[in-house]
Length: 114
Length: 114
Image 1 (cartoon, rainbow over the protein chains, first blue to last red):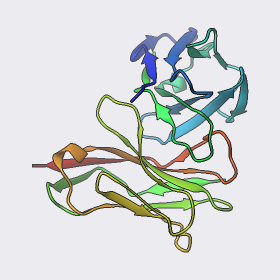
Image 2: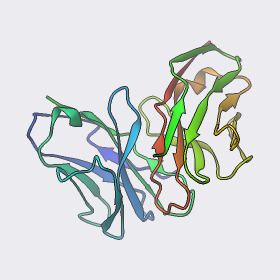
Image 3: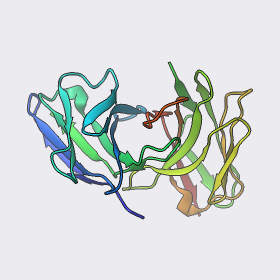
Image 4: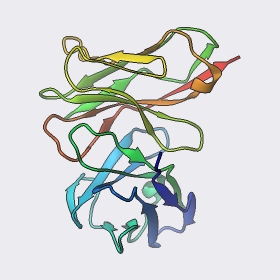
């Protein structure tokens, strides 16, 4: 089965630094997503992206966050100035956007902000 | 807002034991309901789903029935195997959504001992 790939698997950064998390969605998918899971808490929706623009975002996704599809294959999440509370596992996902279609998730990037 | 509550983990069982992981939800209308599973080192993957009341989702010996009257979607398996050790997430997708803005439960870690 095709896979969503995420890099890096672990990222350590200093508070206040910018980080970019990278994802390669499945090639014929049209919708792209970021979710995150803070340790011990629920997996939370951050943002969905379709047709080169954000289609929906949660209240977590403030001005410090941005997403981009810089070319035909990559989908990135940028955190402009990281805070301690941004430490979490970040999951990228994609699908074709059909009703009730499953999401294909990557294995995640563990972000640690020190 | 919409929410999902799962039974607290971790859950430890012996091989061939019967498994139930409880999941209840709060949502307006008729959401779609999902169980996702995360094996060690991998991303979340869809285990089963149900899109309307009284539907039963099933896969790999696991089953869950969409119960509107009790707002529940409990996961069951008659005889678990060591390979079922994983984290299980109950999730809902709000009614009439195009993109998959999933609302997750907190996850239940399941360990099966031989």
